[in-house]
Image 1 (tube, rainbow, N blue to C red):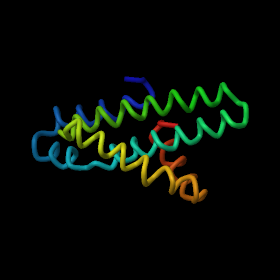
Image 2 (cartoon, rainbow, N blue to C red):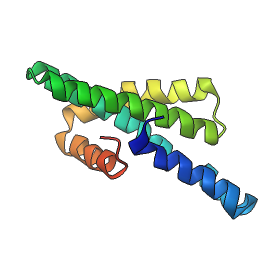
Image 3 (cartoon, rainbow, N blue to C red):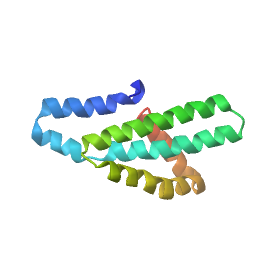
Length: 123
């Protein structure tokens, strides 16, 4: 797990260990960080492609690494949420089919996702 985004997983695990079953169940059923990580995976992939086309290979590599980090965070959170691998894979497929085209055609939406990813340190 990469350092910048690992705080999310660590925080959820700490909450589960310290707060008890009732509060932990509420945190485990909150899939927002999981969904954000998946959107960040998509946004970083788009940003990497944009930077490659512009000839900025260093920045493209940076976004590629953040895409991999987002992927790992999403899988880790999916495990915490007790999602099956098939469900996690389906969520990624849906994001690639739905979110990616939406981000490409709607620049303000893409920038909102970028801001969200930066807030989670996933971009």
